[in-house]
Length: 203
Image (cartoon, rainbow, N blue to C red; front, top):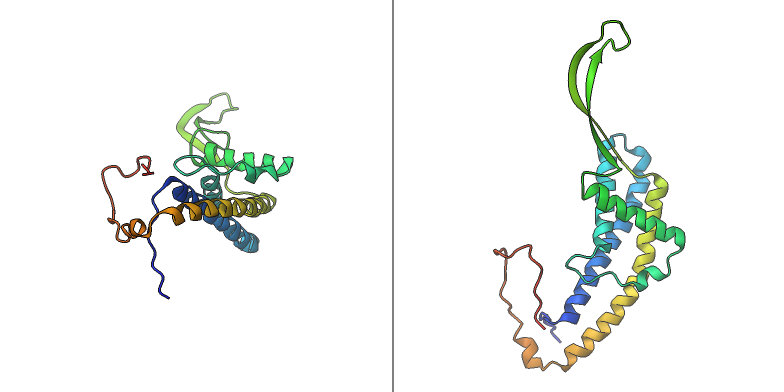
C-alpha cells in the first residue's frame, strides 16, 4: 500500500498544527537545557552562556505566548504547583521584559560623567559615557526549573494534542476523498506582500 499526503485546510486542523508547533518548542527547550547543564561548568566565556540562555528563554516563551498560534490550553497549567507557576511567570517575564524589550529591570544603560580627582580640591571633567549592565545567564537551578517545566507541560500538551487529533480525524473522515485529493498539489508560496500578517484560514 502506498500512502500519499494531502494538506488539510480547516480550523481544527490548523489548531492541531499549532499545538504540534508548541510541542516541538518545548521539546527543544528540554533537550537543549539538559545539554547546557552537562557543559555549564566547562564554559568560560560569558557570551556562550548568554547565547544558551537567550535561546532557551526565547524558545520557552514562544511555546507559551499567544500571537498567531492557537493558545496553549489552560489545562496544561492545571497540574503545575504554585512554585512551578511562579517559575513559569518568572521565565515569561524574562522573555517579555528582557529579551523582547530593552527597557526593563534586567538590563540598564546609565549615562554618567567621569570626573578626575573627584575627592580633591581641584576636580576636573574627563568624559561622558554609558554604563551597561544586564542579566548574562540563568543559574543551574533556574535551568533545571525550566527543563522540568518544559517536561511537565509537554506531558499535558501531548494529551491535548491527542484529543485535537481525534477531532481532526473525525472531521477529515467526513470529507469526500475526491475533495481531499483536490489539495494534493497546493500552490507553493515562498514570499508575498502579506508575509508577516495574521494568517487567514479557510474553513
